[in-house]
Length: 196
Image (cartoon, rainbow, N blue to C red; front, side, top):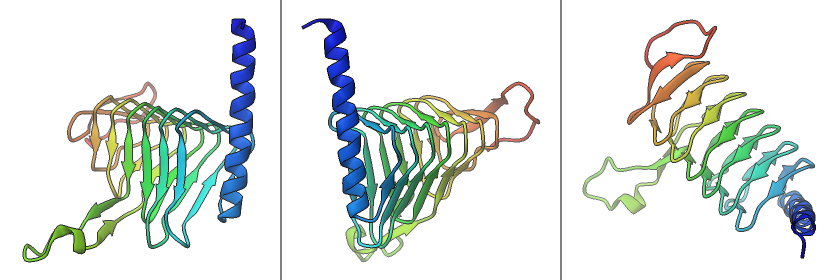
């Protein structure tokens, strides 16, 4: 088999897989725009009644990436031309919103939920979940192996460096790195501000 034929066959498979996911999401009350490409092992799980997943056109979801909703009514909203890297996971118990033109590197975790743990006399597993929404604005680049925790807003055009743990807001056009993530500088033309 020639290389060109294999590439054409792979492209056709991606189109068919995207169409099947669109149909499955629609049957569960969600939606996915045209042009979606979901590579092998990618999964979308609507794990709660009342959950909703909305994905705009031209979404790319690489191998083994997962989008997951949790009870009571998790909601994931993804904009146009979003790229979700290999092995990444987006989990919403409340709401995760990702704007247009966002690039998310491999092995990134975006989760709007933590376990409750305030009663030391009770097992953590029965203390419920604590959730706050996450907003990732338009044009953000999130490098690989990043963790984004509940209640965070990442501003338009920001960059989050590899391996960062984002537990506080990142301003627009900021470049943030580290554990916990902190702003080290701003992209050219951006107004100056303090740490995230």
